[in-house]
Amino acid sequence: MKTEKFLHKLQAFFDTDSHKKRQHIQELKKVLIKLKKKERKIAYTLLQADDDCLIKQYQTELEIIRIQRKKGIEVLQQHIEPKKS
Image (tube, one colour):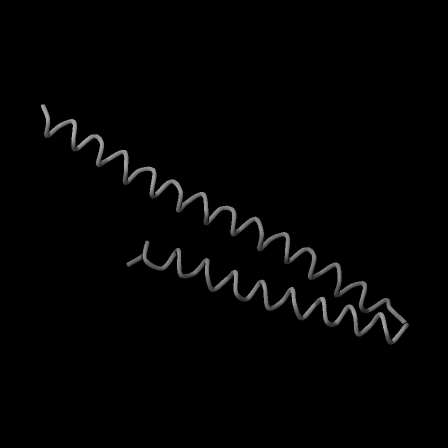
């Protein structure tokens, strides 16, 4: 009986760990989608801008968002890769 109880607790522990990991991956995907939408919006606004000061500001924002997305994608791939191995 003690072995069964221990196995159930161990199973519950691993299930919560995998659940947290899946939840983290889903949150990362949501953030990446939001960043992509924001990137597209700023890129469109950049094309419409006439003022040099605004253009530089939008370019800076766009560069920051691209770097954030790149890092987010790398983190997401690191979380997904061990699952495939």
